[in-house]
Length: 103
Length: 103
Image (cartoon, rainbow over all chains, first blue to last red; front, side, top):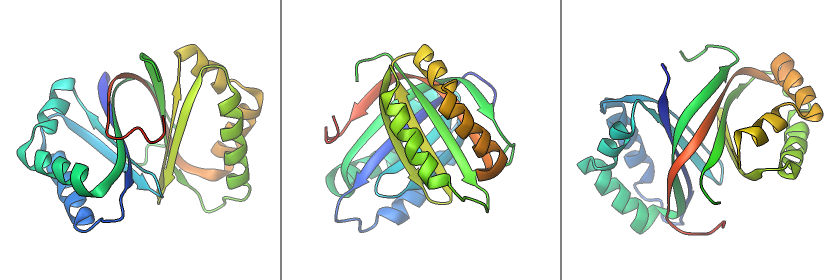
C-alpha cells in the first residue's frame, strides 16, 4: 500500500436474528474488492466484530457507501442483523510492519 | 469521544508458542487504560487478531509506545508470540453511529 490511504473501521454487535448475514457479508466483501480504490480488508469477530477496509481515497469510500447492492445490505444490517455498530473513517498517517506476510 | 482523535490499528497473527500471551495481553490492556489520553479499545480475534485503541493525540500514542512495561511486552511479542503484525496510526476524520450502547 502506498501512502496516504484511508481506513474504514466498522465495529459491530450482532442481534439475535442473523439469518442471511454470513452469506451477504461474504458477497459484500467480494463486491468491495471489485470497487475502484479498494486496497484491502481485515476482519475478526468474537462477540464484537471488527472489520477494517482500506481505500485509496475518501471518494473511493463514498462510492462504496452508495453502491446499490451495498445500500441494500446496509438496510438489512440496520433493520435486522446489528444491535449496535459504529463506522469510523480514518486517514492512515504512518505504519510499522513486522513481517510482510500479506504484501 | 470528541473529535479529532487517533486510532491505532494493530493487526496480528499468533505463532505456535503463545505461552503467557493472554495474561500479558490483559495486563497491557489494563495499563493502556491508565495512560493519559487513552479513549477506548476494541479487540477481536479469529485467526487474525485486530485490536484498535483510540487516543486523544499522537503524543499520547508515543507515550504508550515507550511505556517501560509495554516495551517489554513488545519484545516478547516480536520474539515469541507473533508470526506477523502490522501497526497503523490513523487520524479519525469522521464517524457514524447506529446505537449508543457503549458511550
